Length: 303
Image 1 (tube, helix red, strand yellow):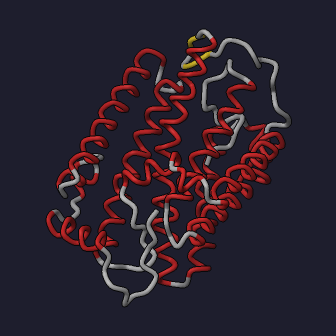
Image 2 (image 1 turned 90 degrees about the horizontal axis):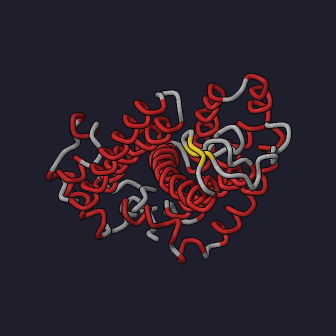
């Protein structure tokens, strides 16, 4: 974990100096930003750039294949498209944060993209009370709120063979595949949303306003943006989602912002909390009803 610069007149860190050199060597360009990984490669971060570009090609290919074989409206196409959208977001946010580090701005996360990707599996990160307690409490609350929104928890398919992307599978490989899909997708989601809402927005408002208003505004925007999930929810559940789901997600965003602030603007704790909440609540939903597509929004409420 790396602490951010908190004072304007602090000495430049080694990471800020490295970011300055990389930003000067390859200024941000819109054409490169639209393709995940190209800006990273342009700035000499070859391994990260190649990884992002390879994922983009793989996810686009998976979306096209899923759309052709199952239809564009199915999860076979939707899941890789969601991952691709988050990949583009995190690639752009990564460049934005590097530019801010190069300018030696306050409250800018110092972690590299690779370090943030490993944060959910880091013992140093997971051992922090703000992380393990946050995951436990948010998961319990999330299941409760999901039950309210969905008017109960449907378990009549529990224990049956799972259906993934429209195909019924044997139990063991089906659960393993669902776990792999969830881990990959929610790694994308956690990185993209935490880099955007906490790393860029909360820190920017903390600099221009103050830390408390920066935290509050980013939390409110986080909840408001997730209100768009209503478009993918059954009409009978929309009012309950607006009344209970959106306020709950806003509170979760507020806690993520506090974890970010309490850890001196290190982004690793909030990334870890976000990842494990999403993965575990969707795992609970999949176990309860494995006949539906894995990672279904209708049961759990990932954010």
